[in-house]
Length: 136
Image (tube, rainbow, N blue to C red; front, top):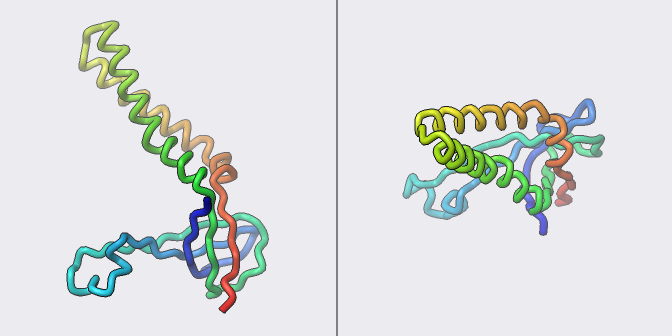
C-alpha cells in the first residue's frame, strides 16, 4: 500500500529535490474550517534523493510505502517505550532502587536517540520517497 502526498517542488539541485507539502488534519480539508478554528495544517519540506525531471513550482506526488511508515513508528515511538519499560523493570527488580532505575532508563533512552542520530544517513536511504510529476 502506498502513502501519497501532493506537493510543490521548491528546489532541484545536487541530486536532491525539495518538495513542500501541506500536512492537514481531518478538519483542515473541511469547508467550515475557517469558522471553527480547530483546523490544523502545517507546511513541511520533504527531501527526495536522486536526479528527477521536475521543475521548481511544479506540482508533484510524493510516494512512500506504508511499511516505511510502520518502521518509522517502531523506531521513533515503540522501541523507546520498550527500552524505558525494560530498563525500569530490570533495574528495579535487581536493585530495588527506583531512582537509579529512572535515571538509567533515561540514560539508555538518550543513548538510543544518539544512536539513531549517528546512523541518520543510513536511515535516509531506508526511508526514501519517490516522486511523480502531476500532469494537469
